Length: 290
Image (cartoon, rainbow, N blue to C red; front, side, top):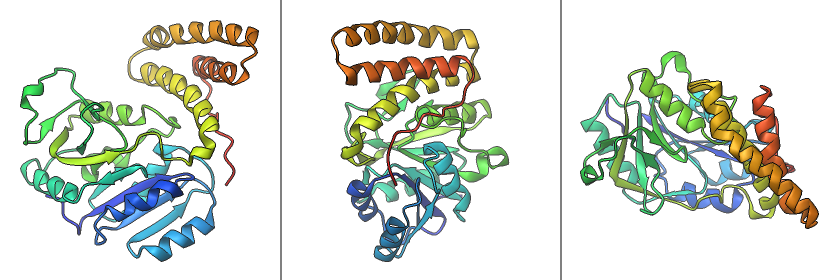
């Protein structure tokens, strides 16, 4: 089955994303239903966005549950066969959807289909066996795609299991792609379908310091958990222990220099590793008020 406007929904997870979400929505064809999952209880945001855009429905998660869990809510709520997950700081080009629709006619049994970043310096996909000579116009099979733009064929996900909600942020898309491959599914990029990704602008910049602390904590936690889950505890330790040791050293240095902000960043890196090491959940949350 190929994709069309009639069997596609778009899911966007937001949190304090008012500065970018409107550009994102404006770039999407108004005939395609959009499900916004706001990771808070911001009813004012829900009422405003639903009143401005007739094709948008907003679900409030009530709390900051993370990207994976938020996406799962949107995917489950979607009544269509295909769901296109994008971040709020993504802007589609005028023909992005049409190019994806056309590609789906060539590879109807894909599990994940993705446009590519318009910025060639920041590719949103990875191939273990690199063969860049093939990247021309035809869809190309890859190993991973970034989570800020990935289109899912729901029928190819066993038991309707999508993102692992143990991840709060980072590597939940890698985990999903790896599971797809292990289950015999396929992941493709469409070189002719392009998107613009502003990158790290999904949350209002006034919360930049809190977001930075959260990113440092969760990157290390997620990296350890991803490697432990999919490979082994030993591999997780090898991948993350150097980061932990470096963070401890920098905590000492920045304490001596009385640079509290830098100290907090590296403390969070060390804390993320320690919590993953002892098997604690990804509990850390940025201090962002609803």
